[in-house]
Length: 313
Image 1 (cartoon, rainbow, N blue to C red):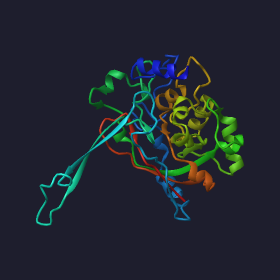
Image 2 (cartoon, rainbow, N blue to C red):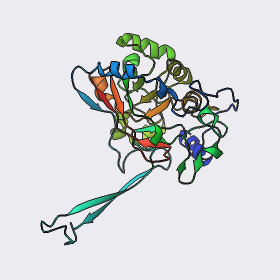
Image 3 (cartoon, rainbow, N blue to C red):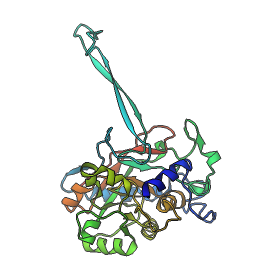
Image 4 (cartoon, helix red, strand yellow):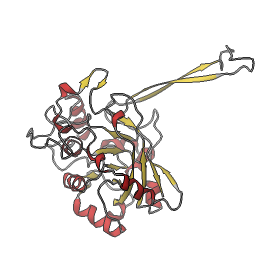
């Protein structure tokens, strides 16, 4: 049933819409001409404070390895083609030292593996962040606005909320929804507070299924609900991520509002979504706050982008 629902969403077009077409969600709280959303909340003071969290010098790669076997939504896929120059062909060689080299061609969707969703990814009734109409956004070769190449460098405080501890299970079941009450309770249990300019990550254990049961992994997931997303956006967080492929719970809270967390965060609130974040090592170390660093690859006009954020303690 869930697979059929996802297929229907894909066939409906590139844009995911919410049930309501009301226009009271723009202009943005960051200004009518703003293009970077909640990233505005990262101040020089916030960056300096985040750097002060680095006391051990331990780093964590939050990006997973993306390849041909990476489970992906819908028809998304990945292909790498290598072009050897000299090796395997007996030449030609480069210079007297007979140098050889290789090139590679990547043929891939950019919304695969560990990724960031830009503001051109999800809209409401043909309008995107700050009410920008689709006609002012899309071209066949890339976005005219909100391309992920425009996302500023992000260096700020990161917070991990370990929902496996809250539910007392190593992996949450698909359709498990956690909202503001659960988020607040687990943050308090961990002794952390969520603040303005933070990046908030959730550990659910779901990423472990990539190796053990990839078919189940892509058919559903635990995740945040609308109330939880709204609560975090109200705190002024920059981005929200999880070790799942779409952040929000699937099946969700409403059969009528498909991917409502996506449209709320991206279109209404200007909060980026991070997916397939590798949170297991942070969870194992009980690393609940850290410096979060991300420089998004600058492919012009991209809607989403494969990333490898770094956590530093």
